Image 1 (cartoon, rainbow over the protein chains, first blue to last red):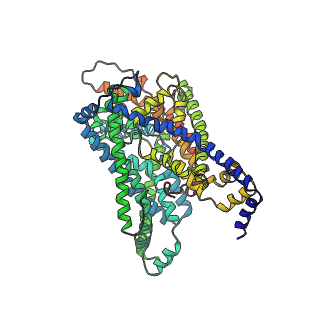
Image 2: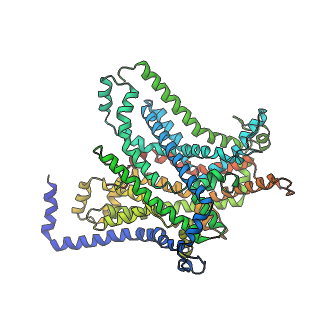
Length: 322
Length: 296
């Protein structure tokens, strides 16, 4: 209560000095913010101007200021036979990843939250976090160690047991499943933390009251825990849907890479652009791919946010991002 | 617990079983990796996976640590991770603190400016051209600078600073502390959980980054560890593909392919240091990761 009084006192003492101090502090805050803002400008905003390349006949020596050719790159792009496959793979794989990751992360968070044994609970959580520390390059190396036809651990084990070996790197149909498994394996430890943070914060009295009313533990999860997780689930799903046109090139490039036999099911927009960049073919067309991707992604973020807003407002809540 | 019915017991058992199974799935690859790295290489090819190595040897590690490429890679990765994490945290904290100050007028436009980069980008090719143009190419800074500002962590930091008790900050202000003093003496010491969490995630991102090494290093005579790993895999792949072409007359020098045990030893050496950091920051996790990063 004494606080408001205290604030007023120095102001009375010298309004001019207070103003000066505010001005100095304002400059200081600006000075703190500016280096970061400039970096963001250089790393994120300058490349946005580079979008013009999509409408140009790109020449390395003239950079962003190459000759303007209108929509030619887009015509080239949409007449290309691979585009349909790239878009389908990107959306299909991302939808698969979002679904699997959300279901597993939520389930594991609920399960860990129900485990009463404190030591076991911490141990489970710590070990589940281990895969998070592996880069996709390392995962790729491990996977190769398991799956290689000649010296892979799995195939040598199958061979010494007298069984038929499996040639993983020739069969594109099994890879969406393998990639989804890897994503779940790598992300659950970190993914379920966000859900656990919500679960830990739930008032235990709610559970006790439900228990007194005769609710079983499963019912308590369905009626209390799950509804309270919904906003978090929606928020995270929204974030992922906004990125549905962006392939996880960090994973796919490292794991699939140059294995062309697997491209029919795993080649995504981003890996296509990277290859274009490395073979320095048509920069203009690849930028057109990138621009279409950014615009569709942008529409996707706003679209999914709008749907969430309408849907949640009907329930008297607001789960939307902005 | 009150009233433990049979269904509750079954449910509880189910929880333990599923948690144990999933934990095992997460753990087994690490176990096999370590075992494979200390097994004699011919035994590995002959018997395949063994739960316990029949012939124990540290040969693979000796081989790895003798190689100049891996040692250089280590030095590069350690330097990039330390410098990058320190710079990144400093810059992001400074920006986030300015954004959290309610008297700072441009805070909302700045928040939008940062947020916009999360939902729209120029794409890979304009980015690559820009990086080359500003000189982030073929030098060590190409591995550090592009990852300095991460919008997600800027918002996490800002939200944490926003939620600090205003009374403390206000009373410091009355005592005549400048904003810089408030940041260094009060805000940062109170923010250990979020700083530890951010530092962990940022340093893992630096340690595990191979993308910038692949894209922005061409003629440089150094490579980070992750790029070395990727190169080994790509070499093996190329050799395998050449072998699978029917009637190919290419004679393959198998010594060009590092043995499985050596590859596994490289992996163990690569992920070792970053995993060792984890126990120290683990206790801050749930506090540090507050959600609702954008709103608020």
